[in-house]
Length: 250
Length: 184
Image 1: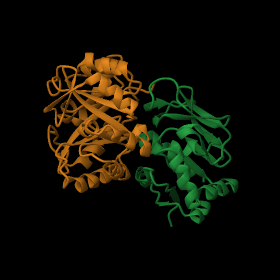
Image 2: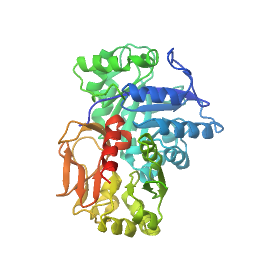
Image 3: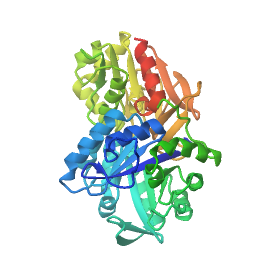
């Protein structure tokens, strides 16, 4: 099995990183390209960009961000938000992203998962699931669908998803640890890797998540101190979870 | 003139390969022009997408024959991920696809662990860690390095293939690409 992955997530709206990043050494904390470059050198294993506005007018802006990120980043990155058709996935992957993340659009039309996987391979399709009380929520975690979380994860994998990005709505933003129960239940049910999301407050939380998942998404814990990601990696390793060695010059 | 040509076959993520080459100071062109693919100093066959559509595209543009002629004449070719798998004789992906046949062996679906196999893993011999993202893997006597027992690097004549993504493997990946290019 490959090493566990630490994945910073950047929320983007209208081409700008919108929340949570406070860092004096960056000239422009709202610039996704500068932040991507910083995290790429600092030891992220991968990055996720979520276009949280994703209006139709934002598509061209996001494509340009993806292209500029691809020019500076030498680690993989995933782009989510606003992927509603195969053409959206093509546009983003051809601009240089490795993978797209589907959320509400996949639930509305599950065949979208298969269409994108057939064209770009399963490894290029992440299905993002927002869960609370074992039920899937969509539209920014506002709409309860009545669909069971584990059953949807299994269907997504069957239809060709290459990874599940599972966010526990109740744990998200609280920094009190991940939802290990639902993460473990989903991972036990699917044959594909699972990224745990929501709740990272300490290295211990991340290490605990990485024992039940293949990767952990982190946001505020790194955005408040992007330079601290190297230290965070060391602390996670001290908790007994092996990560890839990162050279200081990266 | 660009010293590196990245093969265009429709669905590949060619931009990332070009960006990694730019980090190393190489200019690159994305093309399926057979003449260019035969004669350029260095050619990279990148990898995203499915084996069937990639091979159809390579045949339709004449790139397949050009790449065979190139390697027959001793021209350097680097295949990345699907680009490595396409170099074998046959793949079981998409119900069975004939490859370029640059390397003896077959490509089979991964059977153990979580598939796709995603993430960073060590390549033996050596201690470098690279990024992998694949559901299929090559079985060949020309494997010169493995990762968790799976083919990671293949060498046959002037062809080198890697299952990992050097263009996505941070500083270690750039070092690998630099070594490949410096041998030419």
